[in-house]
Image 1 (cartoon, rainbow, N blue to C red):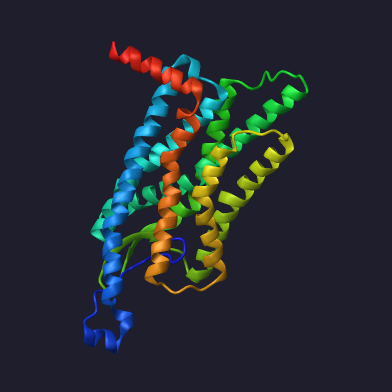
Image 2 (image 1 turned 180 degrees about the vertical axis):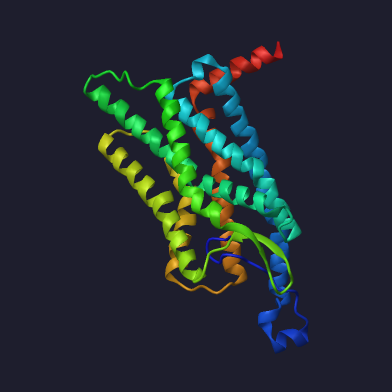
Length: 309
């Protein structure tokens, strides 16, 4: 689903007589060629995101698991962040296939899995960033008070990461329940969507509010409060990049909730851009949280040298 317009089923190309008679049943030539361009461009962008994200996140996972010095509390959260992003980029080619085929050929079970992973991507990144912000706040607080943190261990980080995964699974569970294969009665085309009960419009609005509050408002507010309380300049570029990728998606949710926008080519193009931007966060995370870190680069260089000898 696109954030501003939901499903974007494109009617067939109009001929002049059709268009003059009923433009609602067909697509004018200028708009149809715009959709044709999107048909080519979107898979290319998705493929780049999938390739870069899969490579980067897999490298982060490998480094943290293989290098003994990389087993720290912070890196445990980065590891889980990379696993979440890797899982999403791994199934992104299925979204590409659906886009190219213009229908869903993979069945009900895979539909539920793919839509669930798609929603894991919405919640997991921001929740692990929230946990990392809480961890930094506690470290700064203990430093100011000159107190040790005996409870801040690698094992504790594992337990917290497991709790985050359980929380995300519970949050995404309603989307898993409502995900199903829908058949368009007009052309019998199958699509993998969220099928809400009647009145569907109210359920759609409720799901968007649900995602906005749990996936953006609460975690981002928590992070901002913690950063303010620390009174300490951290590397905000990482948080800013996550907000840069996801804020348009959640702002578009507010727009969709408060206005009734027409399903125009421009709006569909903007919606695809917003989705691509949010997907791009999954391939940027390994560079922001791992490859920019000096210890990670040194460990990566050392393992590369060992592998070449």
